[in-house]
Amino acid sequence: MAQICSVCGKKPLFGNSVSHANNKTRRRWNLNLKSVKAVLDSGGTKKIRVCTRCIRSGRVKKAA
Image (cartoon, rainbow, N blue to C red; front, top):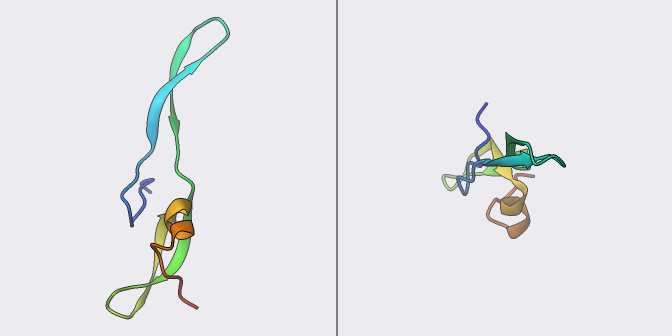
């Protein structure tokens, strides 16, 4: 499954892992995604994958 936040569209970041000998290998920083049952604008509920920053900032309204 893709590592994408369904609210803000944030994706993983890519870069290099650098060893003590200055060897560089590609790596990625994944998001902290959580499955949340959220209330939609239409009034229904749906399970979506959201980053923790969106949950913490209140962009997602959790269903009871």
